[in-house]
Each structure stands twice: as C-alpha cells, then as structure tokens.
Image 1 (spheres, rainbow, N blue to C red):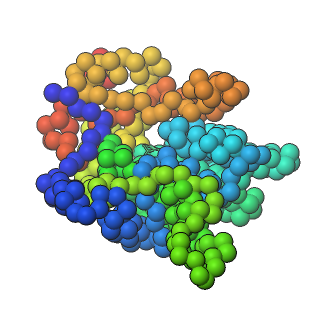
Image 2: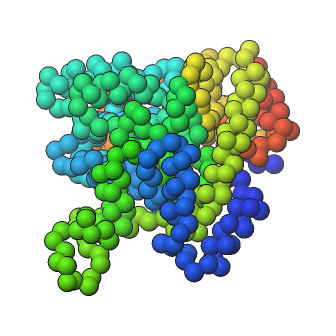
Image 3: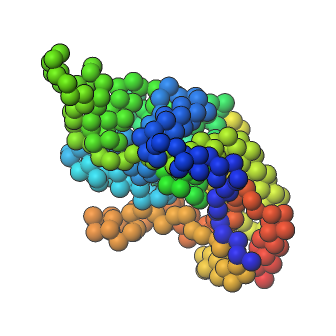
Length: 386
Ligand SMILES: *Cc1c(COP(=O)(O)O)cnc(C)c1O
C-alpha cells in the first residue's frame, strides 16, 4: 500500500467532460476555456479570469503585465516552490526574500516592514511582492496591502495551494487586497486540469494585458490595436511581445468539471486536518496554526518535529519504509544551487531554514480512506514514542 502526500481525484463526470471536448469541433481555443474562466471567476468572486497552461506561466505574465523588468526587484517568501521567484528572473528583474512567520509559516509582515524601511533608505524598494498562501493558509493580506500603499509596490498572491481558501469571509482570488491572484491546477493541487493555471484580477487593464500576453501579445479587439485603417481586412495584430501560454479546451473541461466539487474537496481536506490535529495533540509536534477568520484549503498538512533535529530524517525514513510517502515543502528557494550561484548565502532566512529542517508534509487528499488515515496516525504515534 502506497500513500502519497497528495493525489488527484478523477470522477466519471470529469472523464465525460473531457471526452465531450475531444469529440467536439475544438480541442483548443474553443468555448471550454472561456466557460472555465467564467465559472472560476464567479467562484472566487473576481471581475476577470485568464486561464493559462500552468501557474508558472501565470506568474510570468502577471510580472510582465505589472511591468517588472531589468532594474526592478521582486520580493517573496523563501518557503515556496521556485516558480514564485523564478518569474522575476524571467523578466530580467532581481529577486529577494523575506523570512517567514514561525506560526503561520507565511511571509512575516513584521520582517517585511523592517526590510521595507531599510530598503527605502537605500532607494531599493521592490516593485512587486509575491505573497504565497502556504499550504492553503491565507497570508495577512490587510496588513500587506497597507504596506503596499505606503511603499508603492504591487501584490501578486500566489494561491497555487489556496483554491477555495477564505480570508475573513472573502474568497482567495477576489483580489480585494492585491493586484492579481495566481492559481495552479497541477494534479497534486486542490483541483486539477492536468497542467494548468489561472490569474484573477479586478483590473480591466491588467486583464486585457494578461489575455494578450498568453497568446503572443496578439489582440483581435479593434480598440486595442495600433492604427487600424477602416478599409483593412486583416483582423488581428501583435501589439507587444507575448508567449503561447494557452490552456487547451481539454484541460479547461477537466478543470471546470472539478470546480463543481471544489467545496466538497476542501471540506474533506479540513476534516482530515481536524483528524490529524486530534490524533497528534499529545505528541512532540507543532501542528499547522489555526487563526480566527482564516479558512485554509489544506493543500498540505505540515507537522514540525520538535525534539531533535535529526528526528526529521528518522521519521521520514520510518514512514517511507511503510509506504507513507511523506514529503518536504520546501527547500528554501535561495538554498537551491542556482540561487546560491546568484549570491544567496545560508542562514539568510533562519526561520524558514529551521522549518525546512523540521517539517514533513503528511498525506492529505480527498480519496484518502479512513483506514489509511488511521495507519498514518498510528505510524506517527509509534515513531514519535520510540
Ligand atoms: C505548484 C506551485 C507553483 C507552480 O505551479 P504549476 O502549475 O506547476 O506551474 C507555483 N507556486 C506554488 C506555491 C506552487 O505550489
């Protein structure tokens, strides 16, 4: 029996939706993509949504649309997948990191403010800050928004883990405290389209720019064209340098079908996390934080092993040998060899490094059975009490 940390759930309805597209006239650039965009936009309560082929692509075009380029700096949390910071490098901008908060494991607002004060003195303020809702737990958006108004940076929410999460009653993706929000539909995430991503925003300008950038920088709308004489018969024009980051209709059909079950999926993830909380309450572990007003989508359930540093490896190997495929999220981005080659040094964000050395991500996904859940819990109790 192998129990991974995350896994997709594909139903017969999902399969029917995909087959429907395969049998239709369009497998890409047809009606399924706008339909998914519209349903997703309504679900997160945003004005606009642009579907793309991955969250990495979504982050890239969000950075281009926010005019990030050479000479600019993007800040993010080191406790994330590399895509949250690579997007700056694609644009020729620099990247820097703000350490995490010990309890929430998200970007620390106090450290963000301290770093802003210091950077303002040197005239090196960031143009964009990417905030990552780690494991599906919302960041302190209101405070970060207040800092953005004071220091003049843009905010991208990396909600790759956070489809369906809520911040004091507002849906993550509704962009009340950010310029845009990015989602991932990779199979280990909350809902999947195979590969896929989405950007939501309330800005019409940003939306138009994102929609062009994902398809070569080409527009077919006359008001976005540059000098289109009345007697011309051509009907599209490239007005900036874009990419081909389009989602296919096959993927969109799967994504939209999955979206119908999203609240059910997140309820199940929250039930599993409640079960874990209860099972581990007397063990020497730090469990995910809970905070009034924040509803996590629990993409990950991360425990921290508190007794000895070497225990992480012991527990990891013990569980893996039993087929419980726990994982580590994440190696702080700047510790990757590529980032070290850019000049980042060990101990740059000490809280993130401690978390990296203590944490393990346990299995959490909608089809995890009660039997599997009990097996994970008893195995962890056993190894902790050794
Ligand atoms: C998965 C993930 C991404 C990238 O998503 P893709 O859709 O695979 O490109 C970006 N940021 C975070 C935090 C992620 O977990």
